[in-house]
Amino acid sequence: MTEWFGGGMESIDQTIAAVCTATPAEGSPSRSIVRISGPEAFNIIEDLCRSLRRIDGRGIHHASIELNGATLDAIIYAFPAPHSYTGQDVAELHLEAPQVVVEAVLAQILLRCRQARPGEFTLRAYLSGRMDLTQAEAVAQVVSAGNRLQLEAARRMLEGRLSETLNACCEELLNLLSEIEAGLDFSTEDIPSIPVDQAIEQLIGIQDRIQSILDQSIHGEELMDLPSVGLAGLPNAGKSSLMNALLGRPRSLVSPVAQTTRDVLETEWILPHGRCVLFDCAGLLNQTRPDDILAELAQRAAEDALRSASILLFCADGSKPDWSQDLVLFRGLARPQTLVVMTQQDRWTQTTNQVLARAHKIFDRPCIAVSAKTGAGIDELPSRVDALLLQRQRDSAGSDRLALTERHRQSIRSALTALRQAQRELLDGHDEVAAMLLRSAVEQLAPTPSEPIDERVLGRIFSRFCIGK
Ligand SMILES: Nc1nc2c(ncn2[C@@H]2O[C@H](COP(=O)(O)OP(=O)(O)OP(=O)(O)O)[C@@H](O)[C@H]2O)c(=O)[nH]1
Ligand SMILES: [Mg+2]
Figure 1: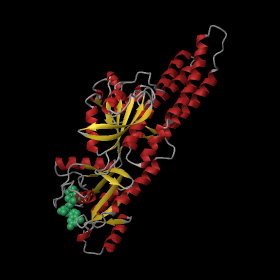
Figure 2 (figure 1 turned 180 degrees about the horizontal axis):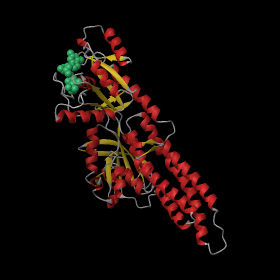
Figure 3 (figure 1 turned 45 degrees about the vertical axis):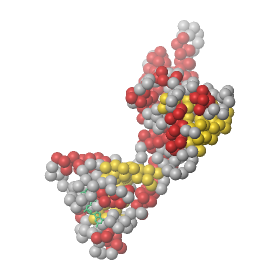
Figure 4 (figure 1 turned 180 degrees about the vertical axis):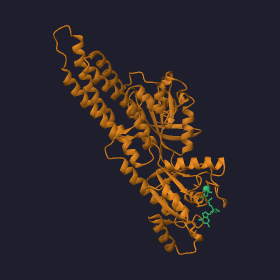
């Protein structure tokens, strides 16, 4: 984090540049945007595009760039300060060119300014008061959102829903505070302060509203983290082989020796509606004490990872005549979001229908037949997991719930503590202490750009961005 902040806050005066569009798929032509922000932004663009007149206001310009003897068409969008994303002079260079050419143009620009760090454009937007911290965090979430539902929750936050709700509470608190303080300031004169029971009633109303924001919120971190799908089963069930077959490449070591996999091996898995983390781990043993320390560590790592997985793919070797050991393990692990996968179908001596019917009876749910060797049934798994993940997200992300990050949660909790204490102080007639506590609650709920905010908090938020945002 401190690393991210490296140059410190003074670097806001430096001009920065970066490509701010996602890298397109290889070979596909697309428009790339190079963004430059800072006092030198327009000078740099004017020098780069010789045909360009002086930029003297907001506007769109067609220009050409000379690059290694070739001429390149570009469109320049100029946003003078303070009416730009960052609040500084911003020039955006839109190029219809292959990635290597875009990189070459950026290299030219970087002779005159420095490369933007991840999130640095948004940090500047925040520091110049163009957006509040909540909105900046929402940009981070949009940037890193792995699927449609994550995106929607992040967007609600970006639209300022949280700021709006908390600001309304702050307004009310400030009104109450001014009434209490008026009573304090003029107590020697004849101005009656607000009756205690009325003040307390208002305070309780505000607390209830703030509490309900907390109760109904979704964990922002949960939304940002990709859901995880774990491969579970006895040793030699065929978990690692299945992982490799699903990915189409050898990610995990496979061998006929039981307990081959020791570590938890994670990899990104692309599904129809989003991404997830697929992980392989040690086969679980039903015995309580594993034979050696390595096995014990592997067991613990696997149990921990599987416990926190969003979905389990429980693997059982379908060629075995007896699945009683598998069933013991399954009973200890299973939850609604568990798919039972009967593996090694190419080795089955009974028909697929016979094995699946037997498995259905034992595991008490429909099972899927796969063979990592022939690829049978493998194509079915992504859509099955995808459907489960979508359902899970629909269940957890109600349509208008707000996504709160841990930082929001902490501020709201501290505000609530201060409000409860204020309520007690009011009852005891300590209006001055109550006023102080109300002030602190307002500060917790409404951090504005003008207030000093811990650099570490800022850094933590902005470092989640990717370069160019
Ligand atoms: N014929 C056939 N063999 C398979 C298939 N899947 C796995 N195997 C074999 O079963 C053995 C165990 O496979 P792994 O994928 O290593 O099993 P695992 O569940 O990861 O085992 P541990 O890591 O020890 O827990 C290996 O010899 C694999 O080649 C399959 O679909 N068909
Ligand atoms: Mg394995």
